[in-house]
Image (cartoon, rainbow, N blue to C red):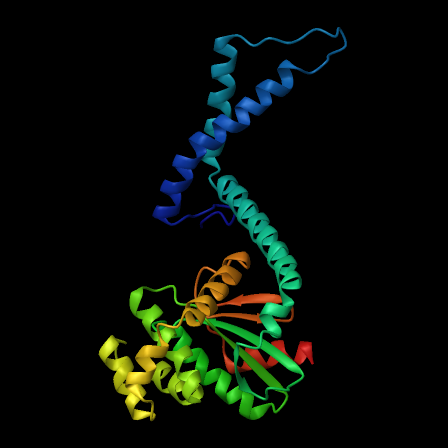
Length: 266
């Protein structure tokens, strides 16, 4: 019978932990040596370690970590959790500092009820497959909840075509076709290309010549850059990203989870 206390690790994690153990052991040993070397003992004399004693300390710590690699993983997990907490705390601070840009910017497009009492902000990219899935969830959510207001933030981070799509989408505002163009472009099958962008634009009734002209308007670039700066402040590194209840939710989520999050805000 196998010992229940035996700790099994996947080979990849074992390799990582063994490499990390050398560094981790060095750090621990160094701290321990420094601590002991500067501890004021009863005689108030500094304790100096010889090279041989120092090597023995390193060897003991290294051996312990080699035999107990889970210690390294637990340490890494604590570091990661601390980093996540710090990022979340800073994100909340940035949300509070940028509430007007997030929730009250007159240039932002809105799905659902423009005067709804419940607001969600979505950062999205037209080339993002998960953003396409998220749009379907958001459309369903706005139909189910008449008080829901979804604020759309064009956040082109996946390359030049993403930027072209964002420019075209924002330029479609000047022909009052944003909603139709946005949803058609986001829900199209296949890869987005410049040709596909203008094909869809024509299908929803946009004047292509005017659209192309409006896409070069400095105001369009100003709107995109403003959203990029806002996303950077909020440490948004991928799409979709939702801002709900003073919290940033990364990635696409289910309708059920979205409704649960919204119910907390209501």
